[in-house]
Length: 311
Image (tube, rainbow, N blue to C red; front, side):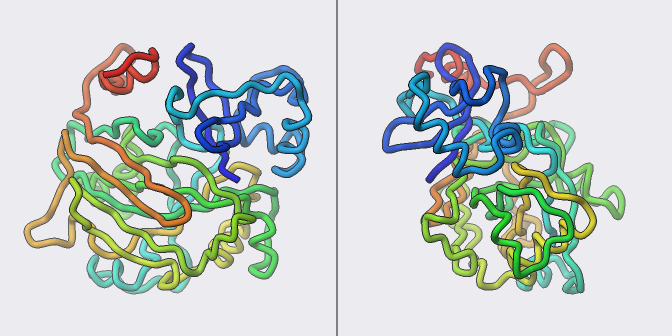
């Protein structure tokens, strides 16, 4: 099952289940009480994904949309927590010239720092070192606090793809990476969340990152320092996890900062992260432009999708 969040051509936001070339708009189901919420809020309200799907399928009021007519958003638009592990591949730690951590090195990203599949990611105008990082990420389906590794996968709804792109020069401003990780729309998540009951093997997911069609990163979750179970167990040891939270598992070697000369993303580039069995997350890089309120302006292509017209 694939969960996606989206905006319709009419401009209304929702979430639902991707079935073939359509998306079943679960967010319109009366079982949610008629009040707007995202996937995380619905999971918290109903209890779990299977209950949510069952109720939605029985609802006569549920709408369907053509998948190619909606603009995809990050699969979870209302996550309480987005937790990311740095240096979770031995080869990436080596290329960064850093020691292998003895515990997962988590940092936090804001929801506003991500775009959805097909939207432009924004290169910060104040950075000259905009780097790519392809990853897989877990979506929490059932809340828990201090979850054991043995019980961890029972709390995971599914897997999505994440581009944890970094402004490396800002990342080096201090010992904390927060500044380099949270520029608006600098990263991306999507195109959807694939549930674990689809037969996903979290220990054998292949990750390939391409920049303008050239493969720049290749890795496998078989080579994680801290696997999915350890990541969930450790994260839940210091914060209670809620349904809809996202836990990213880190990037393999091949990042731009480790190359000679360094390889940085620039406006016009196409970034793709592919994970067989999950899909491909694809985003163009756009230059940052000042918009009312001081936030990056949405590019012309994304505006056209939002308005229901071809770019």
